[in-house]
Image (cartoon, rainbow, N blue to C red; front, side):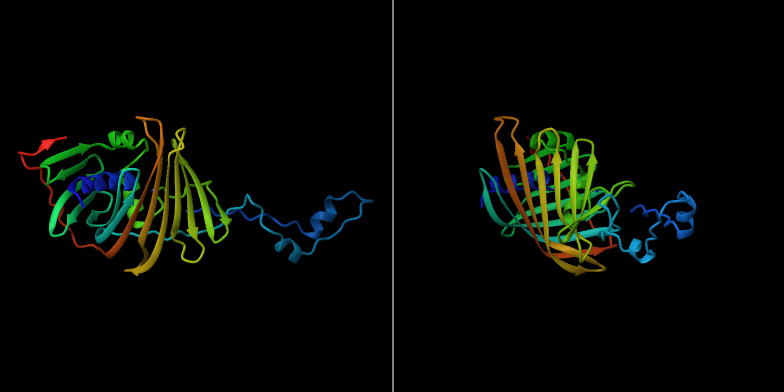
Length: 284
């Protein structure tokens, strides 16, 4: 595997990784007395048994109460394998070490054999990559990177994707809809629409579809291999598909990206995030 390919992996990682339900009001069931009182004197009133009313099917507009189980943590450390396939690259099982402080810092190190070739540091404001082989470094903000991939990215989206949480919490007025073995919640956030598919059995996010308007660029995620980790079910496998139209040639492209965690730890013990840019490195 060439270092150039590994550097491309780090960019794809950033691109593909770079989130309460309201109680239903009880309707008042009219009693027989109320029905008779409201009816005209000569009318024939058909009394409906209370049991029949109680078993009427729910209407589609009713909210389904779903308590989504999200992963909470202070610090995360993972050793993982990452593979991806795109128009230009087909790379399998690159080693990546990941560290994270919730809502704050994401650190990653891409290793070829015993040698680290790329190190990255992502904060809420900046994205930095160091290419140790070519002695170069890269600096981005989320706005610039979003333009590069023609898709809106953020730190919160990256964090949610890594741990399998809903990127945007459910808001009042939003309603789940039953679809096969899932509870689906559709959300709108600016130019982004999201479809969250929650597992019927484990109440964890199993699928996520993010679509940007008006480009129709989309990010699709499938989570699998849920394993008990601390008090949570954690997805050890993530499959990500990024479909986008290039701003350069106006062509449609797809990148398929897979994360397979080998070891994940969630703790309250602080982690270090060592990162520096050597003075002799050139900015690209």
